[in-house]
Length: 303
Image (tube, rainbow, N blue to C red; front, side, top):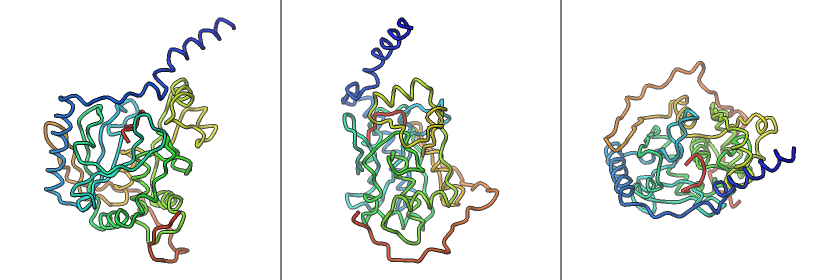
């Protein structure tokens, strides 16, 4: 028993540097990486100019999540008429060495300058009505109100304790579909997303990975998941894939384009045929004026 205990301690000590915040390094982007980010950014802007949406969703392949069946890891929203300029990307990040997330407004090249796993992107253009509402949320300040600084890469969307980057995008989309905006905006957003049929991704994380990460990595929190989830290692999270499916089942997609360094492929969008169209529960709601209440690259597996 003593020998096993010593081996475990030595194993933890060997892994701690890789899991600790101190292991996070600010690295200068190489010329090759900058050229690739610039190339992909230009190709994406070309597609945006061609399609000319007010607002679109962009996902990038930041971290290799293929073992979870996921191609894209991180999503943001790009605005044509952003106060800071044309085609500005707004997304939630936790910068290296920080523990609190922030919303960042960046250009296309910067969006892809985070040493991504692959230089690939997905551009999802919502229907025009949803674009108009998303633009209003940005201009009214609601986008900032929906941001939660407490960050966890595996934030549970059923809870409001933490938020990951993709969950902020989901909450923006849900509120954009709302007929009114109460003071408790985040709770309203998640409730509405579920009413519209949102299904979070269930991600299986191994025993040692999840517990070591929770102990040593500041961006991994488990306390917003049930004890059963923590024991089984099956966590419900918001992913780019689950957001795409959410838009599809509600027939909110106008076009989907996948872009890489070789070019782009715009799919002729054919909405899936759901077993039954999601129904909104609005009979107890009273319309009120939409008022805002006064109420990054991330160093984790998803970005």
